[in-house]
Image (tube, rainbow, N blue to C red; front, side, top):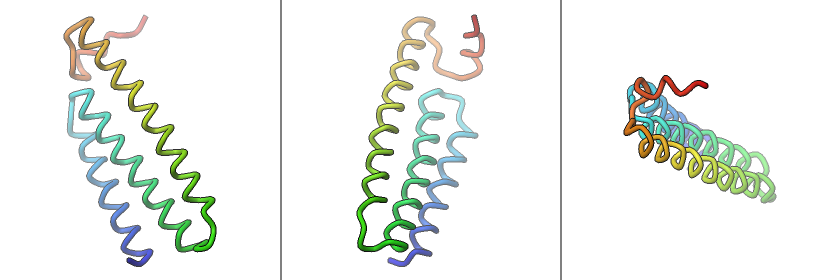
Length: 101
């Protein structure tokens, strides 16, 4: 697999995630779109590090740390969405707009 193929895969993933984030009103589906977009960035970063510095594992370790932090962030987001759903029975972004204050 060449660097161009990796970057093309990352661009396709990012486009799918962007479409998912912009077209959905459900909070969970919006977060899934954001997750796919972040994964596309990590795939591109890992590919660039692999082809730019093939002997070192520094880039791959940084990508793994970023994936772990992203999983923690998404778990916290899903927890907040679940708490919102349980408290107000709301699962779409338009109905959750009155959360200020």
